[in-house]
Length: 413
Image (tube, rainbow, N blue to C red; front, side):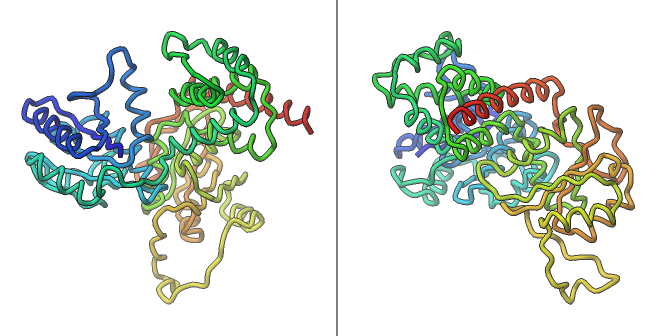
């Protein structure tokens, strides 16, 4: 069983605690994924990529909340990813531990509050033995079977596609050469299965390069995929570049009174909004995603009704006229997300009316390439904002993969 430990251990006492916790879990047969202490990131590895992989490979996670950790941008990022996994993968366990004089209230503020990590019962202790004992009691023996992680599930899917379609090992070697990653990865497979596994590992090793590498491999291998498999594969890769913090904010916003976020970018309508939503409910989630073209509340309601995405339920006794509607349920896999024009960003009255009439919807507002100025009491801008250069690059890579798959599908159709 793989345990990821998130921490910020600059102080000697926290570093000593981390080392003791790692030693305790290893002594009990667990595999510990941590950037410091014995057995951390191997020399020469890119630490950021390694940590990102661990966040999706681990079977459970422990967060050591020291004062430094509550203020650490790296810890906040890790919490966002882990919280995201716990929502779409209910069996995934997170164990917050408050150390030193950190109080529970610290987990309800800022980015940690957005991630709703305070919803999870935390332990308060500086005793490494107690931390190990309490977590091990919840997880069971290290050899206990765990649900498949998102990383393992996606890797298995990609590996099976490659293995099923390619039997010529020389074709794999050609794809490897085209990827140009010999300085980062070792090519040492011993058979067809290993060829597919090695290539898959490289495809998924960098989320920002995943689409580009997928295009390279598909082009080199000339894989002929059935339509269902091709679309599913592209859908999985399409959203990997999205910053998990932004995806986490989208999901968290579903539980707020102001159920709206502004998204700026050049390709929000055609590409980016769909990526954000898919990443927010990655790796699964039959969310309802609807695009409306009008900024008028009446016209929007008509578009939603025509789409069939809105599920009307009889009003509750609590929803009598003059009373505030009930708080919508927590965000889930069936969440309704509506992409609307950015004109609504500055129209507080229209947004208020829509939130009342469509209480289950989360509104994403396409504000165009330039992010608007925040309005007091209005929707927040998604944070972090979409990087314009990254968005353009990913959109072009997506177009390349889309063209390759469509050409192969037409050729085999």
